[in-house]
Length: 203
Image (cartoon, rainbow, N blue to C red; front, side):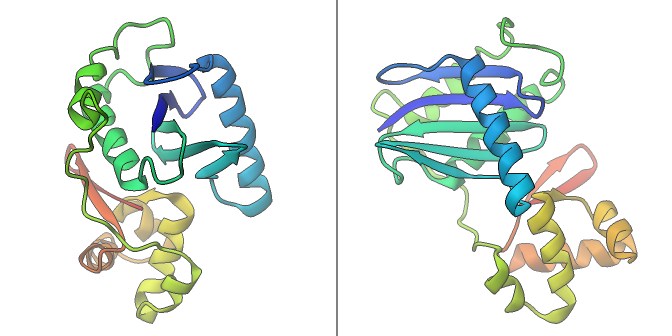
């Protein structure tokens, strides 16, 4: 069962939180916890942590710049990475111009209650989720065609990229980078989303 949802900006400022059942932790304490374990994970393994189990509580974390979504559940399968991704996309889509401007005291984001109600409903019934993509880990990267491996490694490290960013990092043209990213999307290795005229590729 889903217990709580939290959304923070990348600086750890609480933007939105909602309790579904049980004790609802203080967002400030949750933010400190998230900042600490994320920093530790980046320092030790070079990647953002996505899941923590504490006794019988399961904590799911999803990062999509410029926010982080955290869900606390009773079981590890009570919420999926795809659903967290959907929540992040919807939040960014609605509040992209406000995310970096408002803090925990703001009422700006409370209208997101309506969106979560649509996603979970009164009984927490899930809506249709985003298409499932395959995990982009070390083994799956090595199974890719050689010309896609460096692109896959970079997006695995960054979490989300643009053709311009990939081109600059790999010293290839933006068009070549876009073609390779589109190949990964067709292979169901990455998601795509549009932000204005820019296409973002994310895992």
